Length: 200
Image (tube, rainbow, N blue to C red; front, side, top):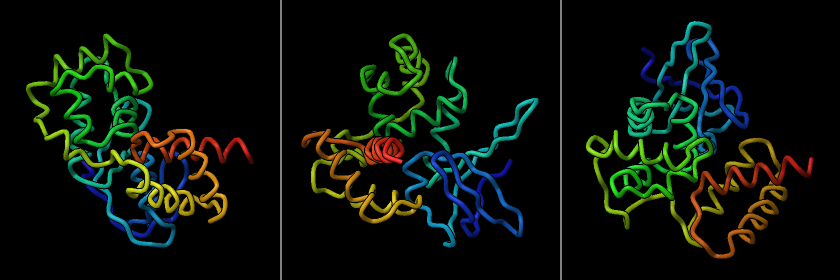
């Protein structure tokens, strides 16, 4: 198993990145939040999980070992494959996932595309005793207005190739949509990318 990759970032796209490792470009599928921390031409280290299928080998990359561990744990639940596990981490931070599962917060889990009420209940039932728990107050990634998500989203957009003005305009638009409500960095970044893609 490829547990991690370290090297220079050769490319960053909406769904993944390419990291040069010993002269080989490794294509890695990542969440928006992980991609936001990558810069083309800069060194990076990603914790990775290799998913082997009969017709494919797919490498999934994460900013931390904790994210990778949770990605792999989620797949032990019935009906959860790597794409759905990645979608969970694209919508929620690892601690937010733990809080939702430990607290049986099915409403939070159903915010993930592809997870309905029954799927959320199954996740809670199968993983609650193994997920661990955290203090909901300490959950990172939930940011109110002016507490940092704007800067992270702005940096993520410029890292993906948009100009500073385009990034600023998109962040302003997203902030207006949420109107002061809390928003996760990954959610805000994904929405900003949607808005920018529509304007191209």
